Length: 252
Length: 316
Ligand SMILES: Cc1cc2nc3c(=O)[nH]c(=O)nc-3n(C[C@H](O)[C@H](O)[C@H](O)COP(=O)(O)OP(=O)(O)OC[C@H]3O[C@@H](n4cnc5c(N)ncnc54)[C@H](O)[C@@H]3O)c2cc1C
Ligand SMILES: Nc1ncnc2c1ncn2[C@@H]1O[C@H](COP(=O)(O)O)[C@@H](O)[C@H]1O
Image 1: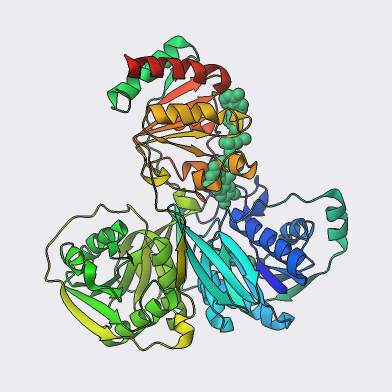
Image 2: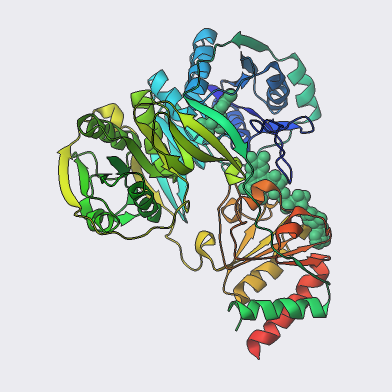
């Protein structure tokens, strides 16, 4: 089974989101980068499927050359090769993202039985790249998947809705977008990291069209400043909490 | 005219759809709605301002089928030419609208908190799980957008709600993906998303056993247990209990965070709680800054004290 996983390098934001002076970007100068959780689950799912059914896992990241850091990290957990869809670093809108990924897939030329993405990216959260890509590739798409198995070329996909699960079945080739909770992603091993250094990473330059969603600025929503009451971790502190619980009626 | 896509599951209308109808009335007096296969919710939509409820009919539309629903909406758009098509920023709303956008090769702004009609359209939308807002303009002849849940409160406003059926022209590809089965029991007891009290644990709990104290406290307070992503990654608790950007979003009357640092992605799921109590050895942890009550101390020492007093109070 040939599997493609689309992953995106995003800043690792901590407790506060700091913007650049012009307010159009996150100030990433002091931040590390990572994959969004959903995409870690997508790579883990791909590696597990290939362990079970054979085949290979290809990774595709659109962005700057620095995406290689995240690609190597995921090659270390068992993916076989990677593609960078190289851009000038400006942020594409979701239509341009799907178009750029499509361009790189076409340029690469290899056919895939399964294309995996995250259900939404950590930063932009457009909820649409996978669906747009599926339309462009002429493939069916199931989104938001939290349970996945493949039998006789048919993917059984489960989506969590409350405590229920909706089941969808789709024959391959198909596009599937997955969520955190699908599996527990493994950590790269030392031998995995050593092997990853030698795995092929190819680059295709892609051109990004003018965005139709034009970002003017980013705003950190104002925090509702409330007076925090600091309590000691002792019986008096516990008594104060019990009193507060009673006041709001959660303890009789 | 604004066309609102209703999110319906087995005759039940998702409450976010009513919020979208309410928001739409503020943009245009002419609000109409569309639903696939199921006219049962027309009266409810009418009570929130839908002048007409268009019902897409097709033998294949027996249960949720995202691409088929989108195809029907695209056909309705062609005959109605709305100024905007809006849906709730719910899993189904976002999914069907992405299909609509892909069919039309048009931009889609998801999770909007506000919309201004015009050329171009101006929107504010949520990023990073709502920790950051983006102000953008959308260049299109018709706006496609989804609305962040709870961006506005639903308010009733009676309208005619005339039901107009139309036949959707669907092919096999449109109906290839649909629900074939449902598994797992419908919720019993208090569900995380709706609980009045959520008692959550993070890495500071140190393992799965100490969560028994959280189970006990949650039971006493008539609530349920939540956790951080570290806890689900460690396998201490199931992912269904994860609170945050990639877990469940909660807004209970009381949120108790035990040994949770308060990363932005966790706060994205709990910052709308009415009261937050945080127990943490680090007085400077971000969760302590947004808490109403911050207990600076070790959860393992403090939780037994709190439990004992809460038990005594509820027995007395
Ligand atoms: C895109 C994205 C999405 C994410 N989605 C989510 C999500 O949905 N939900 C989520 O939770 N996280 C999410 N995360 C992860 C998030 O960034 C944090 O890593 C995570 O929330 C941290 O969990 P934690 O607070 O339990 O652990 P830590 O950050 O390690 O904090 C542990 C805390 O416990 C305190 N502590 C330690 N020992 C004790 C003790 N004995 N008594 C009291 N306090 C103690 C420490 O002082 C510290 O504050 C996401 C990350 C990304 C990048
Ligand atoms: N620049 C990118 N490179 C690779 N994959 C991407 C990129 N942007 C988005 N994706 C994929 O598309 C998914 C959904 O993104 P979005 O539509 O932005 O929410 C992500 O989880 C990724 O799997």
